[in-house]
Length: 398
Ligand SMILES: Cc1ncc(COP(=O)(O)O)c(C=O)c1O
Image (spheres, rainbow, N blue to C red):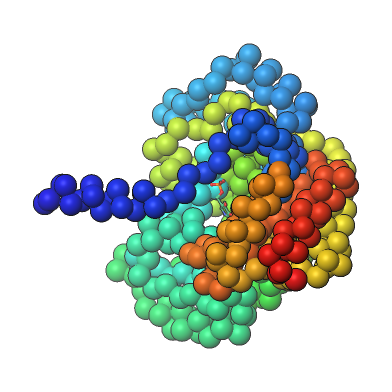
């Protein structure tokens, strides 16, 4: 192997990439970048809890009690605060139980890899998050069906094919499991999965049902309980995956669901067995965020007031903001270069909102993904809107 050529190839790729901006502040409504305070207009800390005083206090108290580091839970014991967090998540999500991982990426990997083997069957929305795609690869499942985005007719076509395959026993004698998996909120467009129709099909064809609610919890449903609550489907989803890095403003992921499934994941999920438990500060921060939401839905209501205001004003200005049903507000620009130039000019106006281009979205569908948070005031949103209007005029976009 020519190592020189190998490294040259890598250098070519990395030298053409742009580096992320360096942030010198917390992730509040404003960020400090290059010594300048700029509006934070694209963060998925929906409820603006990253700098919340109650969370800071709870985290400091937990660090005083436990320190920072944790252990491998099955080998070195489990901290009481991990169990407390799992109990709080189950209460919040109205499920029998929950198990925590150090990210939603790993929670998705755990959920799919632990349930599916080579001879099982998965049916997945074509726009599912990368962590679901990677989880499916990791499971090595050979019968993969990808249905058109949000298209329940296509899902049923795929289900009929899956049911035929599932009639043949696996080589271990068991019958193949069929799993339908979908994002709840799709992170690039902000649209929702048609969950009631999908659940109806899951019941009709007797399959397992999994939803990734990373962008729904803390946002949708009563008091931010998530997409399952939003559609009144409590108890009808086998596996709910969530992230603690978005509305809950910390870090970590979880699976919530029926007790037997959760106990099975605790026993078998490889990312739980072979990777360290969530750190104490992250655990304490997430626990406090959930306690805040169990106590009051004020941050969720504030978030939605901001979303409604921003959307109305963007539309009044004449922007195309897609068909989002969540706080994710894609300002559609189409052309990739235009989206990058638009974002660069916003930055000059002290508004931080990054462009989303291929391969994150299809070619020709570039956009700036704006996400307001509950920590923005009306003045903050107006500042962002004014910058968008100004740049649009300069670039003759509208
Ligand atoms: C739908 C979805 N699932 C999972 C994840 C992974 O979340 P985490 O940061 O907790 O690994 C993301 C993150 O962007 C996401 O958008």
